[in-house]
Length: 171
Image (cartoon, rainbow, N blue to C red; front, side, top):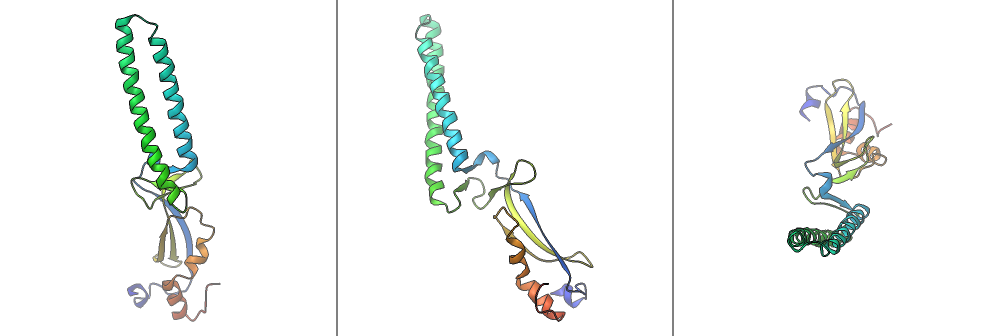
C-alpha cells in the first residue's frame, strides 16, 4: 500500500472494468464439444471423399492407378491419425467441468467478444479515479463480465482502501 501512504489513493473512488487478453493459444488448438464434433464430421467426410476417389482410381490405367492409390492411402492414414487425436481430446473434454480444452495454455478459455471471439483471459481491474493507478486486479478465465463486478467490489485491497477513507462498503 505504498501508493496509499504516498497519498496517491486520496479518494475512495474507483472505476472497475474488464478486458479480455488474447493468449498464445491458437483458436485451432482450443476445443469445445460443438467444435470437436464439427471437426470430426469434416474428417469423416474427407475420408469418404478419398475412398470414393480410390474406387475411381481402381478403374484407371495400372501406372496411374498405383500413384493415385498410394497418395490417397497416405492421405486416409493421416486423416485417421487426426481422428484418433480428436477422440483423445474428446475424452479430455468430457472430464473438464466447462467442456472446453485448450491444448497450448490449459487455463485459457474461448470467450465471446464483439468480433469472432478470442482464446484468452478476462482481467478485471479497479483503477483509482484521480491518478488512474491500478488499485486491484483479478485474472479469470470466465468469459462474461456480468458477475465479475460483485467479485471485484469485494476484493480485499478495495475493502482496505474503503475502510481507510471511512466507507463501509462499495456504493
